[in-house]
Image (cartoon, rainbow, N blue to C red; front, side, top):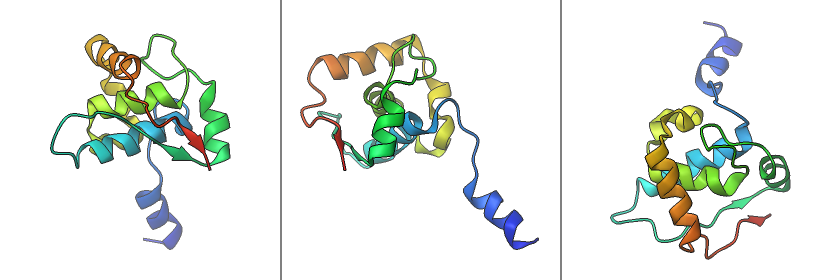
Length: 115
């Protein structure tokens, strides 16, 4: 196998929707998998490009919601990092409701910050 093909096989993955919010969902899912209890709050630091590009895009399966915050809340509820950038294909109405509740109940005590 040539080097370029090997790189593609290990570094390129399918994604559902815009990659900035999905990356927030993915990283949050990976973090939640390491917890021994329920998620109480989420704080994410992203670079300015991810912040800007993810702020206004519609998140797949979110009922038209936009941005990195709902994406990361969905990732926290789904908590299946093995889905990588296709994690949001798992969103159901029940998962969306739990994610919205996490946000509403103050699950973002540390606001999403640009770095």
